Image (cartoon, rainbow, N blue to C red; front, side, top):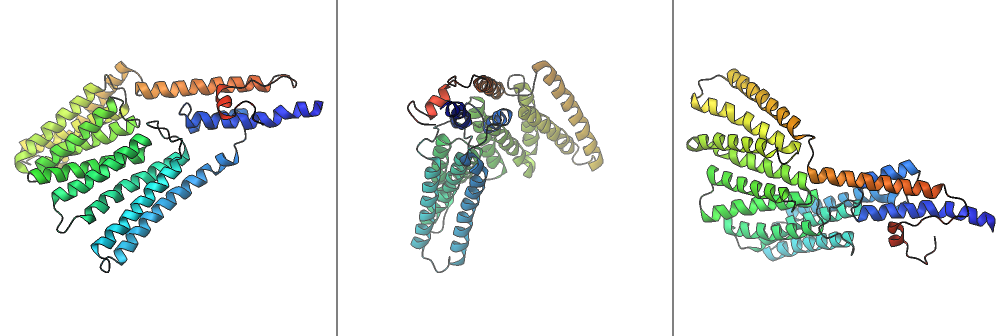
Length: 381
């Protein structure tokens, strides 16, 4: 009996600690990387489910890719033989299958508006993102030929609704990219419905989408905040550069780009992320040689333009370093705070587990809140 009392904690403690770490990851308290560090430090062996995680994630990605590729090949090979109703029905079934697979992969414990951190939820978010794209394609096929901008906008809007709902359910980079792509598609086709879609109106649409995404990210309404800022500023920069294709709008393009760059450099004093700083430097570095080229009517040679761009880039870089010294570390406050809190929790968990491991053989190991949640009282270890 004594031998059983001594060996029982040694067998049960690694299993309960691993389940506790898994629970903390699923609730967003720790990231998967932080949980892995704790396991390595304490020598906790991962369960079979944890060891299968990366393999299952890769298989899930491959499965989603094969479904989409197979659908494209099937439709392309038999497109002429299929009626419009058959085409729409086929893509509708594929969309329904992707939605069902994504929801089943997410499970009934999907963390509503909590950042995706586990392999299973990443696969689920990818499947739902693919479903939003196929939704737009299905609605587009359901409209009678010829398809105009209004019908394209309707199809993109339907896919956008699915993508946005999927992102709210499972916030992830894949969901954000799908939502952004469908937003741009919908906005540009909506502009084309209202007026002629030229370089100026397309640039305004792109800039508007980028500004909206950036504002939502800065307001912390997007869980993937850094990615939202990066994609938003990239779209805004693309929007300011688009009017360069028309001679009459060329001054507006580089002036808007310069204003965007200065705005990013000013914004960096409050939003301490390297993405804003890089966007400001790139925008200013693009605007200066474009202005020189336009004002001199192309009289300045390519070498001189490169020289001017290099000088402006160095000046903008110096301004960036100056701002960096005055504002502190290049990290967003909320991300830095979250990482610091996660590391603190991981260290506290490691300390408690270490204390538990050094108790006397006859002492009952301490049960943490996470372990109680994972293994209710009365359950056997």
